[in-house]
Image (cartoon, rainbow, N blue to C red; front, side):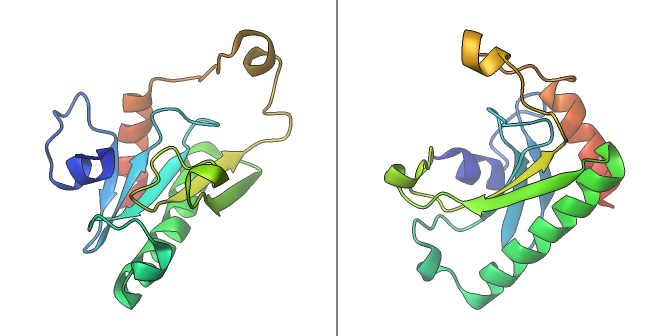
Length: 140
């Protein structure tokens, strides 16, 4: 079972779940391997591998949750901007190619440094579960 389906089904323990918000047809989780702190993934609850295969309701909720994610991240962390995008297919960089998802990545001026280049390591200022809890609170 993929991570989105496991999160949607509530199969992960609280100390392992990165679920930030559950809508009626889509979920928002933190990326376990983020580009930056607060990197969100917005995915349909239904396992779907093709963007064109989503229903109109799923597409609308994915967009709405992406916007809500921007709001929650803005209130919580105050980034200077955001990158939003879809990696459709392995050739496009999709790590989980069989369940479509939207990336919402908060950005700050100067937020890249030498660590990923020299040590293949990313430095995050807080634990993912702390970020999850802060964003859950901001979501309401």
